Amino acid sequence: MRRAVWPRVVGGLGLAAMVACGGAAAPADTAAHAAPAPVVSSAPAPASVLPQTVRPFQRAVSGALVFQSDVQGRPRIFALDLATGQVRAVTTGGDWRDESPRWSPDGRWIAFTSNRAHYGPSPESGTPDTDVYVMRADGSQVRRVTTDAGNDHDPSWAPDGQSLVFSSDRASRGDLYRVRLADGATTRLTTNFVGRAIMPAVSPGGRQVAFAAQTLRVGAFWNFQVHLLDVASGRTSPVPASGGACWPSWSRDGRALYNVQLEREPSAIQRRDLASGAVLTAHADPTLWSYYPRVSPDGQWLVVSLSREHHDGEDWDLALVSTSDPARRIPLTTGPGNDRLADWQPR
Image (cartoon, rainbow, N blue to C red; front, side, top):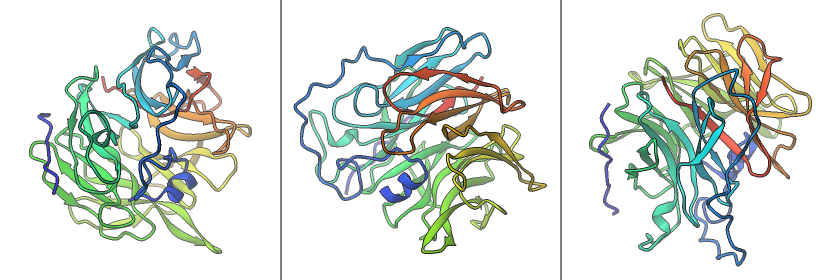
């Protein structure tokens, strides 16, 4: 049994499912039950290589984003200052992958996933699975949060900053768990959920968790659908008319969900009012796939990832979309590398 190392913080998913809904498809060294990949002879990109920004976008909006990019080879975490357009590397490394960054509610910590425990000078043996980590906003004080065998994905902070909800294939094909940061106590929130419970997003009030699962039968296949988990009771319910929806993200007031809609190609971003059931198109472009929506602290912008390709030859870049005018879009990054899963630093 591996010993847990809990961070001092105050304040499974299968590859097919990830690829179907725009997940960052892992190579053989990070997929579940896969052996480490051989070392590639070509030299990695130098650490000075950073995602390229498109300027001047900083006149329209301010704040800071954190996101993952594979511009240096394997995914790393980067931060983008919207006021200056400057990009800095938050994590560095060699063979491992750092992914799915999320700001803590106080903006001082970043949660992310990584398989770094299986690399470096004292690597763990066994399958190089992914665990949840937290670190300071500058990349210092990295602490490992989960250690169980299995792949832990997509951490989402509780609003009090005391715990994280994440998806994992540690005991099933994909279920939701909550880990308390003070002592590492872990609670299983779903059990063998049909269609895999993945892509969790904790509501602003902390009472619900939105997540995606392949629960709708469409011919010989299963389609994604968004579900809501009531944390207190453990009950789950599908969001009405959410077929083809994945990657849910809450509005700042908790009254609506943004999600990726896959029933059209290329994909679009939707906004669905939970009380009325009204669904609006928050972003759509007939030439671009749209993914990973996250709302700005003031509620005026979405940050999204856009690509002309879905999976083959994909090249994802970040952009801002106005929540009041879906036709208004501001590109943020360009050039090589896949820039994904951005998140806004709270103010």
